[in-house]
Image (tube, rainbow, N blue to C red; front, side):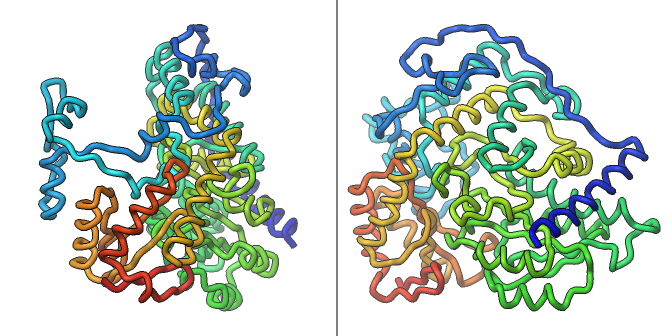
Length: 489
């Protein structure tokens, strides 16, 4: 059934591309080859940095354990004025402390008591790669040789051999035929949803598709805003019908699918939900995919590099990579860099690059960022201890609190905004950067502290964190609903 489902959608995409070809609006990516100037930038990590766009993966220096620089991904300084305004929830435009050159000298200022040191427990830098010297050297070397690279959209002049190399690396990681880089993960989801909707517009018998010609999109109730906004844009084009199913509720999804008479069906879901920290029920989704012949799209933003033996993500963890038709990911979380990507088939890539507006009309990722991201993919694959340490910290948090968390994302729901702000202030005073999540990010009366764990946290950090949390949250009175954690202050 999996092959039949993939074949049906492949046929529709092929037909849509033929229609684009007849209209002469198929868009092509033609990489500009940037010449390589082999230069050493100095320092130990530079020996492992990239030597141009075609470098060997073995040229990247990797490490077998945490190094001092890794702590830069979780240890930060906050200006005292920022600290005080945060405690009192005073709005800020970000201009609290500026020196003549526009930067603050935290070393000097800390001695004068102008800065507070905090431990980050709110970052999505799950592997701590943002401070890795090999990745920084790759970016610096590319910037030294090419500046920012050609500035234009990927379809005009912004696409280079650096971008192509990164796409190939990500396609291999996700076990997909192709990959398309996007400026952000948000843009990637927008592009996918709009491109899916464009199929009904291209294949409609009339000017606008009839209801049975449209795409039926089934979306989890807690999907990321980028998925929702992409669907809304497709709705405005009158190309899709949308059905929202209860969060991870496979009974409800099956009921909606069974009642739908439309032929072209798509199910889209986060793989690891960013606010609740729970996983989509991949096994059940695969079973329903076989039953209902739908296209399965996942947003693996928080699972990529975190889950799976090779960091391939949630689909690798659940051994269902072949059942996922389109996988959206990001390079700005566990990769510690910036940007988004879409792993898919060659035909899907051609359709998305021709119809995905958020891709078409955005300037391509700067070359140094693409170089850094490629280095991050290699480092994330090779430094397997980072994933191991991350999951060790998850086990440590379980042992310290008794909360059966499933992922690095810990959602402590405290109810009202006042409760959330009070708890966040207490954590700030205790030396921890843990933010209160409030509407419209989450529904009213479900405000929370969102705690995230990383590979570069030490167990001692978690001991101190949980001690601070226990002063404002009673772990013994927690009610567990899936992995959602509701706390009484």
